[in-house]
Image (cartoon, rainbow, N blue to C red; front, side):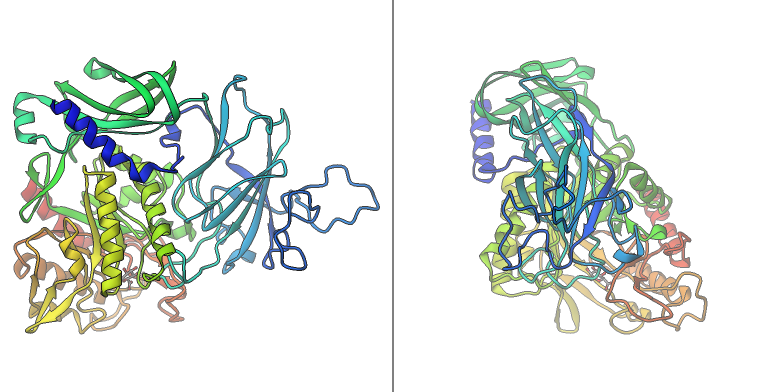
Length: 614
Ligand code: GCB
């Protein structure tokens, strides 16, 4: 009966939000061929390759369309575009950092490359998969449009229709447009640089006609984890979703636990529910991952999954039933010393090396979903992750289409990372200004998230109010989130750092209270007395006062912080010629890769907390 109820419950959870989702997850554990490398480009600020001279969209046979290439030109042919090795750019990678001509470019760039058909069986299907393209992408193969995607930080894929792939020299063209628009997400105004391009891995994923497209295999959120630990018996629940209706047996194996579960599929999904014994839970000090194999009709996907339970009880965040304090740090997806977007496993390793040096146990991946290497590596390192969608500042909350776009990005984020043990918090946005419409919009996203996944917490960086001389956290969105998170800059945007000595804080909600940002700017290597803005000494002082406030004068429900920010990052809003020069300087590590003095203040605080916790 319990099993039946849980199956019905899972199916109910899945239904509304899966309607048109064709995202293929875990491409690393599937048969795939990389299309990374050098691609040709054309910079097209007037979008001449897309619109004709009457500004109508060009059609498939139009020789002026930049997705078409005249392979055998006659000398009399009029040709006004072309791709050449001289204009090549690396994929994955943002364009801004690759050539000076792109430094401040926002607009359309065409990407082109050829590829040969990979080895695949007659009845197999190839899909073009993009880890992310910022922001709007139109994809063409051999002169045919495969589709369009909007959203700069989430993956998508298109099935290649049968018969379209040639043995050799398939012409793949992608129109990439990173112009900002008021009705997009993020909107026109942000505090980070709008890096353009095919910023993440591109691959061909080869699948059978019928295949497991997505799955959710997690510890059952309903079980009492203390009792499970005592009995060493755990319930694993979730579901598998096929790309189309199928009938047959799917098999889930966890070889190390001696588990093999057959699931009879008839339709496009099936619930997962089985028991595991002698299992080690995933923790920050022992990030145990199990190889999990998911098969259908002889075709196997391999993943590595950690099992753990995260929940809120009263004011606390519990990981496997134990109270955890989040010693976090916020990160933008950038490698500051190279002034570029991070995109590889090596980049993730570099960022996490700094995180571990800080004695942190948690990262806030701000303000958009980072590349998949980040949560994957966090899984193996035992680092907890907050990940969020770029619903940032003044999104057009009135516009229902904007809500649709936010929901689409949310769904792609959750679908991609829902099997990552490290991911414990989904965030639906940052510092959105309080109004009824905004709270409706944002609370809809919170509810959507919970419907998609009940095995993580949901949050957002909220707004603070003032009440009887106190900083009073009473943003109405706090009714809906599992933790109450706040960005505070006391001593940077308001007063001097010693303002922390008298500040009073109170939260309306009896929930865990988390500081999702706090920070001050310092130009790396600039030394002066502590009253001098942008000196390392000012930033160091700021952190000293903040830490003292956290230790001695903060509400009891304080459960962690993720200060702003690990490294300096590019921002067109930061234009002081001497101190900023296009960089937000709140990094604890400068764009030169050097640690600033404040780094050591936070490092020492985290060391103390770590020792208390162990
Ligand atoms: C914030 C924003 C973050 C900014 C930061 C700053 O509150 O959430 O995106 O970069 O402040 O430096 O002002």
